[in-house]
Length: 130
Image (tube, rainbow, N blue to C red; front, side, top):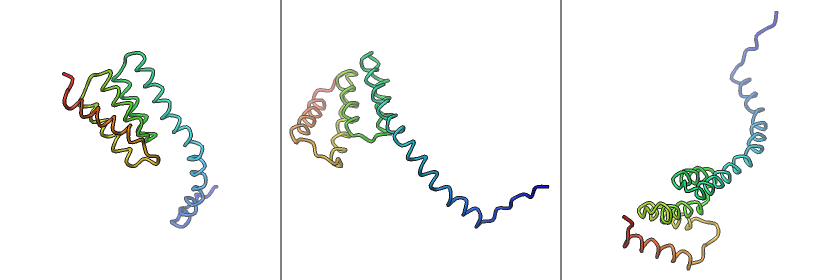
C-alpha cells in the first residue's frame, strides 16, 4: 500500500522555493508574447480606423495602452476623437493625458511639438465641436 505524503509547513516552503526558477522561466518566455499583444492591439486599431470603425479603434488603443504603457497611444486616441469622432471634450482629455505622460517620459519631446498640442487644446476649448 502506498503511503500518502504529508506536507508540513517546512516541506511546503521547500516546494515553493524550488518552483520560483520555473515561474521566472515562464515569465521570461511569456513576456515577449505579452508585449506583442500590445502591438497587435495597435495594428487592430489602425485597421479599425481604415475601416471607419473609430470607436472600436479607441477601444483597441486602450487595450494596447494597458499592456505597453506607451504615452504615444494617448496621442493616437486624442487624434481619433479630434479628427474622426469630432468629440472635443474627449480629444482635449486625451491630449492632456498625453502631455502629462510626456513629463515622465525617458526622452523629452521637442518643445515646439508640445506647444502645438497645447495650441490645439486651447483651440478646441474655444471652438468646441457641437
